[in-house]
Length: 455
Image (cartoon, rainbow, N blue to C red):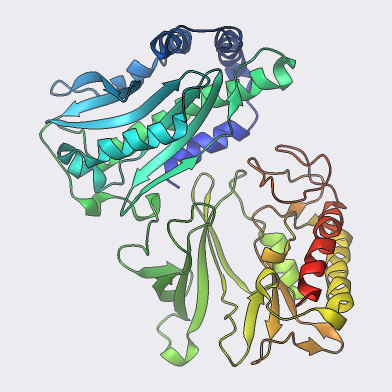
């Protein structure tokens, strides 16, 4: 995730400071009163939205004033295509167009604003004049307004166009006071201001708009800003460890997965015999941290892989280096419980007992994992793919501690997967209770066992 998008998401989900509340709430209340109205056209809805938005002194057109130099002129281009209107706020620099924000307005029943704006961004990236921007991923905020609903996305272009929703679909309706829709929209407005400020800083840092006729090369891009493949130099350095990235573990087109890489590391100038294969995971965490304490605790009792490093790169973006649990390759190894192809049959009870034991251990420490599902539980299998048992217990390891922490202190993250049977009442911002791990286990266990024992 680009740091501008990280900044946006952090500000969207963190409490507003007292000095920020008034102006963003007032604008939010205005939008919630006006946007549900019936408009004659998309143009009329856009004009109403921008007129209210301008009360924050961050009118969409003014997002680029920060950048303007004597040789750079501001452009507001309206692109009409297929009966729809896309507004592109840009900076003109030597013939190309740098877009900070793209907007798509649709009336309630005329189509998919998300798909349309993705296409608009793709067209923008296809402009030959913007080739220099593509070296830096051309990060852009996308605003989708479908009738009285708003969604903010972040887009980058590397080998392919990647568009990630940064907010759920936000209703711009009155009601529920400052704790509901109005407050949520106020968070979004503030976050958009902070995010675009960060995007301006990015383009300044890489020098794209230092001078209207001065371009920069791709090697000016700070490495952690975009992770679309292994870092360019392939090197991994931290503490006394030295190593190299080897390959990407997951399909880069799968936006639901964190960027994971395989790497080999060794201590100092040690020889290859001391090499360790590790997973390097880039995690976006809304609190800007990763639960090192929970991970290390479970590792100390043999229930999680070794943890080598947790390093914040930008606000909200964390690099995690951990032991690689090698997958089953015909001689034995680790597999996700969700992908275990054998039958539980007589092992059903010992697996459940082991999971209950893990939860009890966490509860004793007043800790929660918060996402204890089959995809985050690894089991060890033999060369035939059968579950290995040691002293009447399956060999398990828990992974993915992105949401973990102290019970009653950590909160559920936004954009919860609706296909997961979360504990009743689980929602964004709500504190995670001490018994939520057990409730989640109860919720998915029955259906899981039914599938696995049928094999």
